[in-house]
Image (cartoon, rainbow, N blue to C red; front, side, top):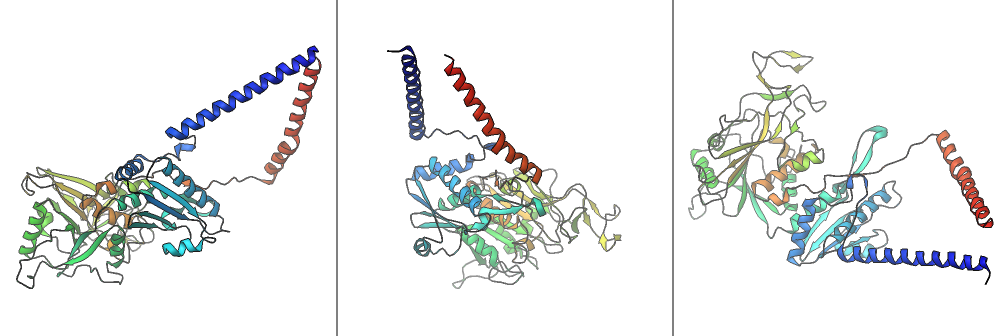
Length: 488
């Protein structure tokens, strides 16, 4: 056999052996990764890695053994952002599937599979339906994506993990709970669909498995029963009473709090302050909260700082802005009473103040140190009363009170106007009801559409490199290899 032929066979045999070994190694790695779900995330900021809170909820779902089905409908074909939306949803559902044994999913083309949409009662693009037994949660497109930035810098963010994490939490809530709204003192009404009503807040709570119901503590029942907070109450909402509560009502609320109850109190400037706040060391000073930084063009809507708390964690991570109008200041006792903990939710910057009249500039009030109260100021706080310390019995869970200096944020007029209002309102109920697992934020990272902007000159350079220089380099490399082998 010629030496050149033996050399070719040797080189060819070695190349074939190396190729077979490489293929076997990759096949083994793929098998092990698929069997043991080993994954590496090389994306920017590890954006394709699920948050710990989402993983914990998936583990809880898996532990129950009840199958969870996720049906995601595609975005509208032909839209500029359709590819981005479908890709982000698909990638997220794949990642969830890789971490769960109980979740199955499918991405359905809304235009081609209308029967599936009709069967599930879906009539809009981009909706995700999560089903677990007889329970179901729907997530609309606007909860998955939002536009951020301004003008030419405007872009789209994907918030799907946070939305699905909340959906999983809803599925883990076994039964519906009741939130009672106090009536009889000119409070905000559950049934009012006007600007000052709570009908939209009621609809939001309905999605979270809460029923918003009226509560009358003034009169006895039909058979003469003494009024009291029902045993099934997740929380009581005192929504801006226009008249003071009677001593008997104050005692009933105090007794309810002593059983480990939860109360949400929303006050406005100049409205009566329920005695229950005084008992937990919270007061409402006279005046309206203003700040040099405000939500344009309304100078009575201060730009607020979101403080660190479970209630506000998702609001801060998503960079949402709560908007409160004509806000009353909230002040907590100093020193803090034994067995009580105060945690601020919203506050002004150091340039905030309590406006009590005096000088104005161009029709807008300004700070007057001789009359006004200096900031920074708290406008929303969460109060925890630990058992065995006086107010709450030792055998009961901690009592919880959430206080906010603006009732308007819960109303139909403002709950959707402020980007963070709806989430703040609902999360206060979750915290009061002890549903802390539904507060943890899963999905702090957001995926964005990234577009490459280049000039005509830069485009010409890229064309020259790709169509001219690169082929020439490949050709040159081939010639060098050919001459090298020929010289052997």
